[in-house]
Length: 286
Ligand code: ATP
Image (cartoon, rainbow, N blue to C red; front, side):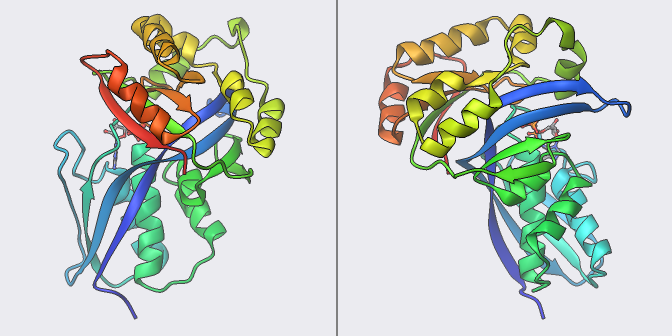
């Protein structure tokens, strides 16, 4: 039994904290971070096609439209894993900026996994789907889980936290891409100046204390990316000058976000800031 068509959203994420603990023997970095789903979303539509192929299309021409697309990989994995005797056409309406630290690619892969599970009424448990997602990327399991969570390991070990809701965000995406790989390779673990207090942050989240959460925002990759692009520090300060309770770079960047008590506050700030040349998104935690 299966549906001919299925539409699903793919939500981006921000980091409220990001700590890198050590480099593992397999060359991956052991991280500890608090991740938060945001309301900025791609729209994914899935359609059955009778031939055994995966077709991909998107409104975003910069996106790879071949097997390297994470949404394509997710569809291929689902078709193989559950021996689905079909082809799938995937359309991605991209709203989340690419290579921006917002896990847009992982979100698309997660949406395809969840969408195919629904479409074919596979009824596989979320944990199993998250396990499959990990094969595609470390952030995919979180994108399947969503909301507010502590991520450990390479990002795949997840502990759900009390979900935040209602807080506003102003996202500022500068007009360049940052390679996650390059940022990690430039990170010197011995010289990290400021690390997040992850345990304290978990408490602040439990209390839903927005002022404390804002003061606890911390990302060890900021030092690296801010050295490459010093204007990111200006953007952070500019957001705070215009009412953000705190600001931080998400992931390996370059997107910087400001945190606000409400989405109206974020919208008011958006009308006042002067950051021409950057893409600005009013969003909220979700
Ligand atoms: P993270 O926060 O997990 O580091 P990111 O937001 O920095 O992720 P993505 O937008 O996920 O980065 O894209 C990273 C790379 O993956 C890009 O260079 C892009 O070409 C490639 N990619 C493959 N598939 C997708 C997809 N569906 N959407 C976006 N990027 C994709």
